[in-house]
Image 1 (cartoon, rainbow, N blue to C red):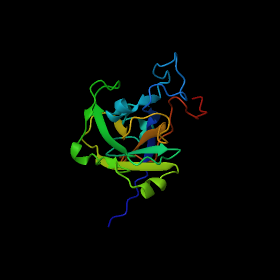
Image 2 (cartoon, rainbow, N blue to C red):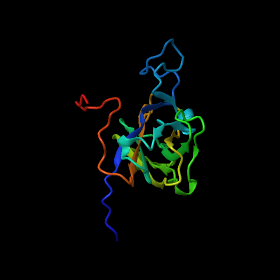
Image 3 (tube, rainbow, N blue to C red):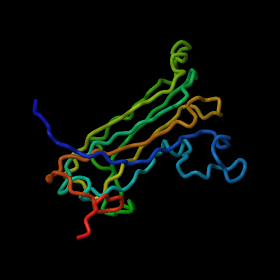
Length: 207
C-alpha cells in the first residue's frame, strides 16, 4: 500500500440548506400567510430531491493549491436535529460532481458518472415500532465519493439531492433537516499553497 502525502484543501461547495415539506410551516418566516418561505436557504423537499446546485468553483484558483488539481473528493451531510418516531421514516441523499467552461454554471454537466457515489438511504420506509423508537434523537448522515478530475473542465460544482419519504406537517421530527456539501481538492502539482490575494486575504504587504 502506498503512502499519500497529498495535503489537499477542503472548500465549502454548498452552504447549509433547510429542507421542509410543509408549505405553511410556521417556524419559517413568510412574506404572507400560506406562501413559500422568503428565505432562499429553505428548500421544498420535492425540489431538493431533484438536486440543489452548489457554488461554482474554479479549480485553477491558486488558493486551492496551484497548478492543475487532479483529485476532487465530494462530501455531503444531512442533519435531522430532532429525530423522528415515524414508522415510515426514510431519509436519503445523493451527491455528484458537475463541470463546465462557464464560471456562471450555465453549461454545467455531470462529470464521470462512473465515479459518482451511490445514493445513500439512511432509514428504510418500513421500520418496526422498536426501530422507530430508537430514532428519537438527532441524526447525522454522511456520503462521500472521489473523482479523478484530470480531464475535467475548469469549473466544478456539486449537486446534492436530499429527500424525505413523508410529506407531512410539523409533527415530523425530520422537518427542517439540514444539508450541506464540500469538495476536497487534491493532487495539485504545486505546493505549498500560495497566499490568497483575493477577497478575505490577510496579507499585509504594501508592495
